[in-house]
Amino acid sequence: MALMDSLLQGDFPEKYNWSDEYEVGVPLIDAQHKKLFLIFKNLINARREKTGNQAVLQALELMADYMDYHFKAEDVFWKLAPEVYAVHRKAHYSFVRKVYETTGKIEKREDVSEEVLQFLGGWLVEHVLGMDRDHFQLLRDKGVVDPDGFLAP
Image 1 (cartoon, rainbow, N blue to C red):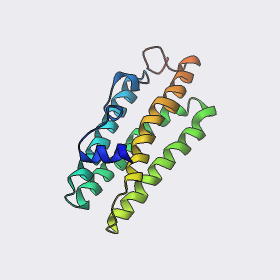
Image 2: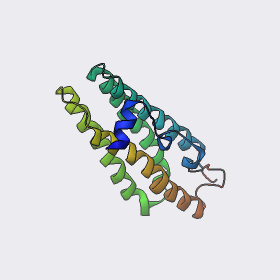
Image 3: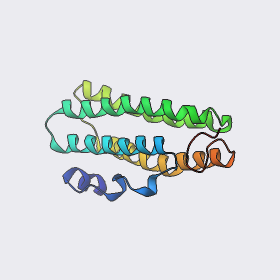
Image 4: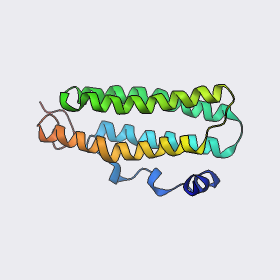
């Protein structure tokens, strides 16, 4: 709770700022992840400014739209590793579901709780550092992705 309080009062924790440690070694995906971190920061700023739910709703809709775009890009890779495809899609679905649930609450004029923001930020960081990094390494180990992060010929 203290983390979210400081986040909403202006202290944006370093873990939500993009850094090289979040790179998975695939240039396209790293660029998309970087944009997702910026979108999350935009969501926090919209919530922090307390100018009404419209700015938060717009930030969430941008996040939902971009996540859909990003997950489709990642699916191209996961289809090359059937052993991780289903588990990765399930993880993505849980995130998208939470974003849409939150959007529905805002449309009903309910406030976005700190727990929701903690979930979204935590999921983003943990997913990129954990599942994405592990699964892209698996693709490199299988020879499907080359050392530079591109699909192998």
